[in-house]
Amino acid sequence: MKLLDEFKAFAMRGNVVDLAVAVIIGGAFGKIVSSFVNDILMPPIGLLLGGLDFKDLAYTMKAAIGETPAVTLNYGMFIQNVIDFLIIAFAIFMAIKGMTSFKKKEEEVPAAPPAPTKDQELLSEIRDLLKNK
Image 1 (cartoon, rainbow, N blue to C red):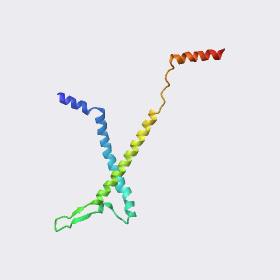
Image 2: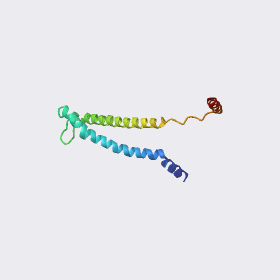
Image 3: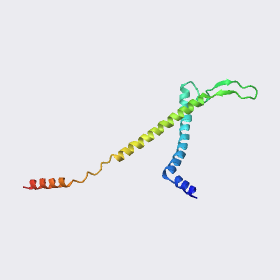
Image 4: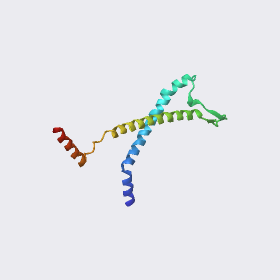
């Protein structure tokens, strides 16, 4: 039972739950970015390159013979995945940069000045007495 209790304590810690939520949101975010790249970004780029679709780029290493399929190196899919990665990495960088600047603003709130020491209080009283004369 002790092992089960330790696992339960581990699984219910805040960091593990936060990580699970981040993985789920990250997966959904990856799908959104892939759709953005495939459906919005790449068609105009392909049009500028003369109707080229990166997904179709491949090097045939061995041609198809009969029912045996061709052996191809699909470097176009690799290019597509690199572009997806760069966009995701940039978006995450911007999100983290925004959160960091937000945290800095929270930390920059000035703290209350420290209470005056006994010497400072005494000097203030002497100053006030001298002003009143």
